[in-house]
Image (cartoon, rainbow, N blue to C red; front, side):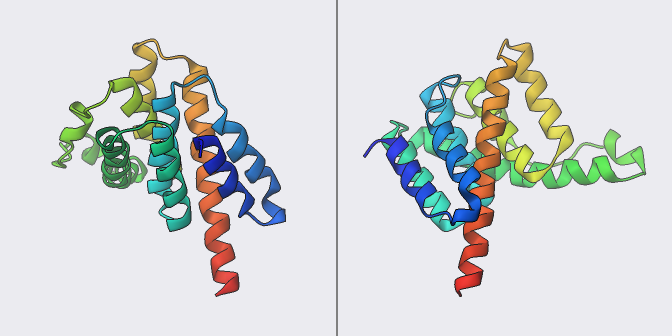
Length: 182
């Protein structure tokens, strides 16, 4: 099964009230601004951030079908993991009125950010997607800024953000559907 078909099958599980989300989910599977690795890694990292089993299982299957090997999928999951940590810390620091915390070293371990095992552009796109889901403005600005300095287009960053938004929305809808049925 093609990765697009896997995502289309996931989209079909959405209820009628989420038809826009289903269409977006499937349309973005055909996205051509990103490389295949960037696209399917963004789907996978976003699904890890959404943390809904059905979405994660489908995006993992799509990533495998899209040719992402174990190491690349581990890097996409690593982006979601480290951003889950960093987004909480840096979002909190940005929200605090006391600016003293901005001058302090975080003391958090984040070696994967500096040695992700994939091209830095791919990893940073995944970090942007996860940071958007987690709502961390400092991490969004940091990773988007690094991407742009390296010549990655605004359209590529936007594609990652769009994927993050529909994957996250898919997770929220399916989680709500499960609660309603449960």
